[in-house]
Length: 117
Image (cartoon, rainbow, N blue to C red):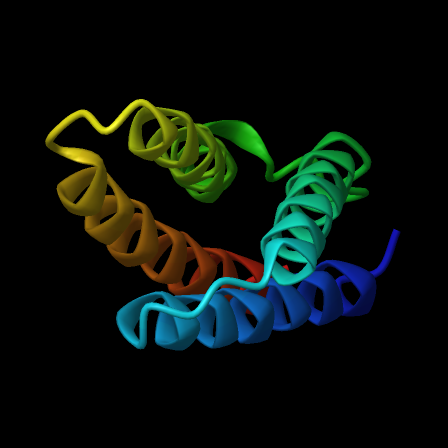
């Protein structure tokens, strides 16, 4: 598998996340955009896992697992933040901020790892 599909899915996920985040800050809700962000994030994480599993040079190892773990934890945090917010529990906004920071960091770490393939 080439790197391009994973990068494309990650960029699309990031763009949908930025749009959803800006709408969240404006107190506007677009459920379809959040759903699109979630579906893209699932696809991007799967693409990164597939790239890691099918790396022809065999350099997946621990360095390659770092972006995958970061993206997976970010995905879980984003999904959990939505669930927590529906129950009106405190901490959802902080979890959402952590999700955003970890997602962007995971994307950047993936780019750094993929550069060496």
